[in-house]
Image (cartoon, rainbow, N blue to C red):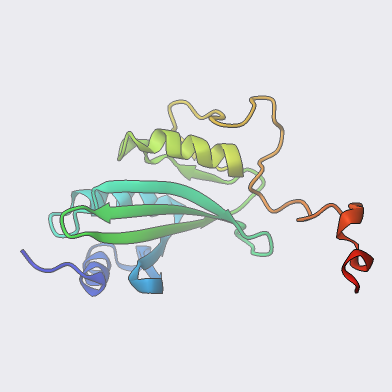
Length: 167
């Protein structure tokens, strides 16, 4: 068995998927790649089932809100090869009033609750999800608390005024 490293993963992905995958970088040795929402299921199924890559453990699905970018949301998948202890981060940038991406539950059943949590906090809709509803917040909550849509602090709080700190 060949020793798996980031360059081997990059070469394999580009050989099979070509322009459907782009390398974002390797922060702290963790390979980060990007794809489009139209290709995410193909990519996830490939890296899970490929005999060389065997990224068969879905560690997490989450999102990031970038309010100043055209595609404001990044859906992030953390994958792990348990045999050789290699991790890969996959990002998909999406936008729109109702950001939508295909559900990974057809590849990993365990994606179910991870996608529900991402929906609950960011409002990302996972198309084809078997039960997409809130999982931690109240059902009647009409906002998504992890979106950067509100000021970080209440400007009316008097305990944060400069004069209390000698400024």
